Length: 190
Image (cartoon, rainbow, N blue to C red; front, side, top):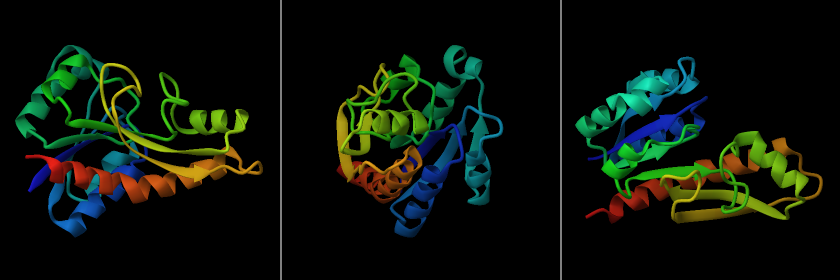
């Protein structure tokens, strides 16, 4: 059984979708959910599914190697960032080469980089009068949203779309394609 660790910062709807997808499939399992916010709803969602979860602070993540040590003990097949807003430290990236992926709510390289997440992205899409947007699933490297692209899915943007409309369209793409892409990556592992 393949092992997945999820990092999240917020409500955890993508994390829960991934958890449910693999519970039905039975070929992989989310073994831990890690969050950098004490009150992140994702921790409650993990608890409801009887999955180990942990809140950590900046010191544990960036200076003390606590999270790196934990990840090494879990030895996940894949680490999934699902709405995780901190940049990963290089020691974690180097310890798990090509095993860390992220989802971004735009078609990278457009609207990526520091500070470009959630509604910030959707507002930028509307402001720039884009005709399409979508999701990008990519490997994580040392820079925000610059890792190699694994998968993209697109959706049309019409002039009447608000940032909230776009967010709804993006969530549908995330829920459909994120678990399938994770499964494909896990199946490609030798």
